[in-house]
Structures are given as structure tokens and as C-alpha cells.
Image 1 (cartoon, one colour):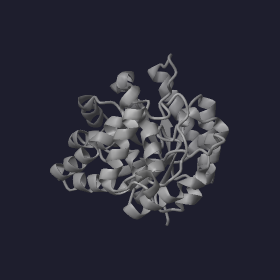
Image 2 (tube, helix red, strand yellow; image 1 turned 180 degrees about the vertical axis):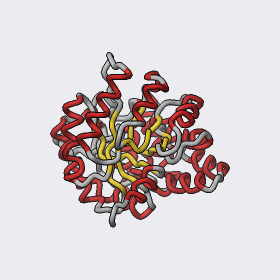
Image 3 (cartoon, rainbow, N blue to C red; image 1 turned 60 degrees about the vertical axis):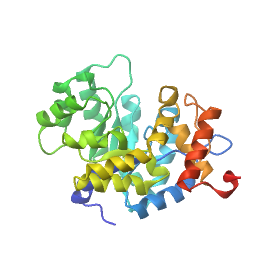
Length: 307
């Protein structure tokens, strides 16, 4: 499928699904194990799929491993969803990954916000300029800390190539101010997944990120469509159905975020392996029991796991 500018804009304002990174028993990434996940996402209608996002354990991967995921996963997606490549870490690492993203088959990049303890707002602007220039692709900014301030956020949105911002802080009123200040042309996306999508949509965001798509993309699509037609009641009803799942992911200071997704996939028969430290692995016994019961309630447990 041809990726037109119109399709890119539409996808970046829909669901940005964040794929897990599968590992084998030798702790090596195995991109091929994503096939059943990608197939289900494509069938459900997930707009974009992100490689090397936080649900993909980007910060636990070596650069060589991130390269492998970026190089091999686009062919598995094969044009069925927009391919977004997550890049970040040092500016040299981010530029390196960004510079090869297009040839690897990515349609856009997502720039992780630098986690350096000594981040200057103007330094972030310079960082994004270099990475965006190296990519030559539409850029989504991943904003997990809005303390850089509205002036810096406005500057970031003026950088050539920047198409949107994944807003991953719970400060909804600051989001509203940013949307008003930046104006049209830049799409702000809820970066805190489905539970935060309704309030962020209400102040002008379009679309949301999702780790749930690895397991139940149909529910994510249902929420997207309900919000698109202004049916907040239906969206909130579906969000309520995943409340226990998302609560499990937030345990241990969010250290079970990926662990719950990977554990759930294994219980449903999709082997994506473990979560690496510093994520919590395996799940605590009580959490594992709750997850098992939830998947049984949803009717998606593999037969062997149900015994």
C-alpha cells in the first residue's frame, strides 16, 4: 500500500501501537515472533505500529539490537500499517538510527525525549533538529516531561519535519495550552494510552498510543472509533473493561508495564519471551494470578494455560 502524505497524517492521528520486542531463551531479539501480533493488528485496523518504543523496551536494547528490530520489522508489517521507528539515547545514536530509518522501511520516526539528567530546553530543540534532519521523514515527538515549558514545546513544533507530539504527561490543562499555542498543523496525540484518551481528546488531542494492541487490538480500535464519533460513553465503557489490565501494568512504579503484556501474550499462546531488567520479571505471584483470571474472563487463555 502506498504511504501518501494524507495517509501518514491520518495514521499519526489514530492509534500508535507500540510493539513489544520478543526475546528467545538466549535473550536475543527475535522479530519474527511478532508476526501473529502484527497480523491481528492489521486485521483490526490499527493505524500505526511503532518499533523500539518504550513497550518495546528501547532502553534495554543495545543499539545493534535496536538496528535489528528497525531493519526487520517493517517487512513483517508490509505496508498494512504505518511503520514508526523509535529513535533516541545520545544524539549520535539517535541520528544513526534516524539516518537509516527510511531505507529500513519506516514511514516516520518517533524521537524519545532525552532522559539525560542535565537537559536544557534549548538543548532538546537542538537535539530534535539534528535527528529530524537526519531522518528526512515525518517526526513524532515523545514528550514525557512537559517541564521544558511551553516556549520550548512551541519551538520544537516549528522544526521542519515535526508532524506531531505524543503527550505522555497527565497535565491535561498544559496540553490544552500547548495545542492552543502551537496552532493547527501539528497533531497532539494522547501518549498515556487508552485510559487517558477521553480527557485528552476533549481538549483537542487526536489518537493515542497503545500497548494493549499487542493483545487486544480490537478493543483499542473500538475506543478510537467511539472517540472519533464523539461517543465518550462507549469509549469509557470499553476502557473500563481493561481497567484491571492497565492497573496491573502500573504496579511496581510502572515496572510491570511491559511484563504484564508479555506475560499475557505467553498465556494466550504467543511466545515473546521475558522482559529484561530493570523491568519486573517475572510477575509477582498475586499479580500473575489476577492476570490469569482476567484472561480467562476474556476467553483468550491458551488451552494449556487454562489447565
